[in-house]
Image (cartoon, rainbow, N blue to C red; front, side, top):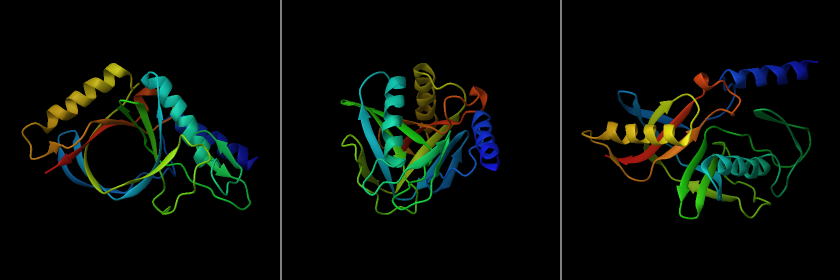
Length: 204
């Protein structure tokens, strides 16, 4: 009964935009420019995959591949029970990787790159069973971030990215790469309470 109540509570929290216990990549805020934050992120590991198709379907397929990896689809795996939107492992040997926020989506010539940041304490990630999943080191970087809520459709994302780049104009920060989009909440979270962000690497 306690387990059931806990699962229901976590599901309810995800509906209302509460990300209790979900780790986020370590960072510090360097400067605030109105609604834009300049953040410094520590080095970290990420699991990523490249997916063809439109942005929404690619995000769903990429999420499934990466979730398969972190929920046991790796060498030395163990079975892990999941309660949306967080994972809970059963007792036993093997590797468990906690899910972190955000989910990252960016575009390349080969398709959409979907990325999960791995927990900070994980310095030697297990090898994925799915060859389409890659483990990549992410170096320390300074990133300009603009947060927004609601449903992150293509037009909204394009508008927010434009606002982010416009907000950097006339400041000491210059874009040093292409903007990406970060998603913190599952799709069933109430739109006004969703946390989304557009981000771009910057140099001083």
